[in-house]
Each structure stands twice: as C-alpha cells, then as structure tokens.
Length: 128
Image (cartoon, rainbow, N blue to C red; front, side, top):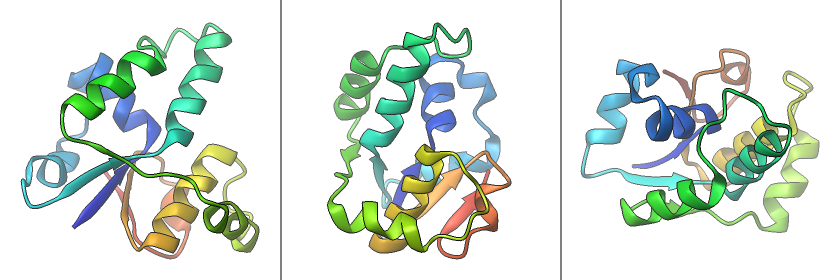
C-alpha cells in the first residue's frame, strides 16, 4: 500500500518522535508499504520556519534529505492534483491539507493525518 504522511507526522518523526502517534506505527513499520511525502509539506514547513514558528524545529532541506535517505518517495504535484482541490468540499480551508487530500484522492493513496477535520473528507484518509 502507498502511504502519504501529513506534515505534522513528518515533523514529529524528524524532530519530536515521542509525539508520533502509536496508531501510525503499523503503517510506517510495514515494509510492504511504500512511504511517500509531498512537496506541499516541505513548502508548508519552509513558510512556518520563515515565520519563526517554535513548533517547526527541522528545516525543509534537512527533512527532505532525511526522507529520501530513509527510502521515502517524493510524490510530485502535477496539475491534476491542483485542479482536484476545486472539487473538494469546504471542510478544511488549510491549502496544504487540501492539496494532500487531493493528492491522496487522485492517486488512491492512503493519507495519514493527525488532524481530525481532514478525515471528514471522502476518500483514503486515516486519522492516527
């Protein structure tokens, strides 16, 4: 199964692993799963670092390198993902979460999230 991790799950794994929910472990530890990350998460992290948010401790370059070094695959954002955002109901207005949902829906990839609001979207979204 292909598994896309939400931004907070990426941040917690890299900078505060004790915050990573135990419910995420079966998905992340299963060697049969292909683990993916979105450039949207790195973009969100870059913006939050630029705003000097204290909850964002790791830089996007370092995180990207660590993800790639640990076998994660980058899921590009083609235009079909971008236009799918328009079809999403206005459940969550965070543009980064919305593109992650669109990516998971278009590609039929499980999106793991720590945000309960995101799980209200139809499709392959799972709260951990």
